[in-house]
Image (cartoon, rainbow, N blue to C red; front, side, top):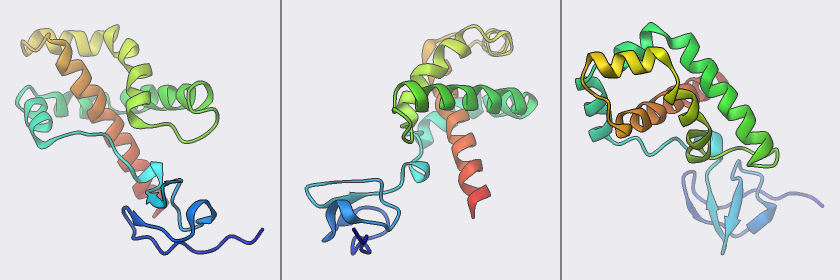
Length: 143
């Protein structure tokens, strides 16, 4: 079977090829083509980013960047194998695997205590943030 090019737009649009698309779209539903998952990042809103910056979570990320990236890679690998059945895992699925690791992180717990941000939402926002940082980094490396 010869794969055809997709006539869909780069982000999301109508595709006249359907599941024969070879234009980087991972899947189609009712002839709507969806972007490659490695280019789809987490729903990290500007409001969440501002909340994280206000509490210096960006500084925490930079201080232990290698450890956070390794943690995301571990969660990514586990999710790819056990949740996505070898396919590209969704960022929200990666977050579900990552959160238990963040909950026991002494660096994160200490930071949350120091900046008075012990709420669970800050752990979740930070998880979204480090996933976004890692996926964005990997995306830039591919260019």
